[in-house]
Image 1 (cartoon, helix red, strand yellow):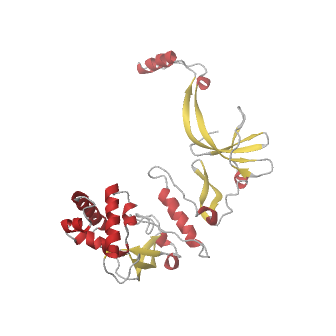
Image 2: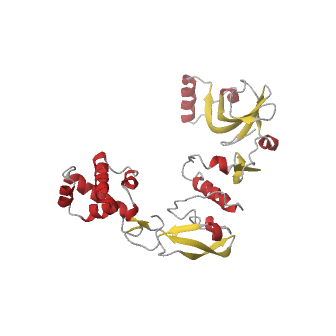
Image 3: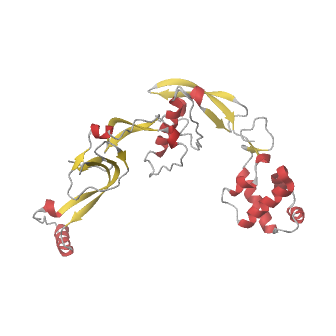
Length: 318
C-alpha cells in the first residue's frame, strides 16, 4: 500500500491493537559505501547502472509513533508496549477509528485525517476536562494553528449553553474576519451577534458595529457588540511591567520603590517628575542612569495613549 506522511495505520499483535501515525520517511540502503560511490560515478558519467535486487537493496522506511493502544476488551489507553517485530501493518478502517471514541466531547475541532484524505469521523474535546489545562499548539507556518484556534472558538460559540468563555488576542484580525479574501472568521457565524464581544481601540464608547461579510458569494450583515479598549494607567502595578521580562533587577526594584512611595500616582510621578528630584525623593537608593532607562521603557510600553489613558469614561480594564 502507498503510505503517506501523517497517515494512520494499525498493527494487531497478541490481542492488542496499536494505532500508529507515520511522521516521516527514511531511505535505507544495503549497499556498501564503495558500491554507492561506484554507482554514483556511473550515473554522473551518464551511464544507467544495473542493480540486482534493487527493491531489496534500496527502500524507504516509514517512521511512526504509537498514539493509542486498544486491548481485547476495547479499552483505549496510551501505549504501554510495542508490537512484535515483523508484525503486519494495515490500513486503518472506519471501525478502528470508531473504537477510539473520538466524538464523545462537546467541542468539535474537526475530522480525522488519514494521510491527505479526510474521514467522516468527528474529533471532539471534552471542554470541562480540556480547558482548565495549558495547551501548546505547535506547527510550522501554514500548518493550521490559527485555523484550529478559530474552529475551537467557533465550537464554543455554537453551544446552546454558555459553558465556556475565551479571550483571543487577534493582532491581525484573522480570528474576527478571517485574515484575508475568502477566509472565514468568527464574525461570519450567526452566533456572533449574541456571543462575540469585540474589544478594540477603534471605538470610544460601548456600541455595536455593523460588518458586511461575504459567505459563499453572498453578502451578510453582522452587528457585533463592541467595547473600547482602554486601560487605566492608574490601575497598573509594577507586576504588570515586570511580567514582560523587559526590566533588569535594579529596574524592577526601582518600580516597586516608586510604587510604594507614591501609590496610585506612581507612574505619573515616574514619568513627569524631574529625574534629579525623584532621585532625591528616593533617598539616592537607585542610580540616575537606572531612573532614565526605566522612564524610557515605561514611556515606550504605554505607547501613544490610544489604549493606556489617564482618564476615560469606559475602561475595559480598571
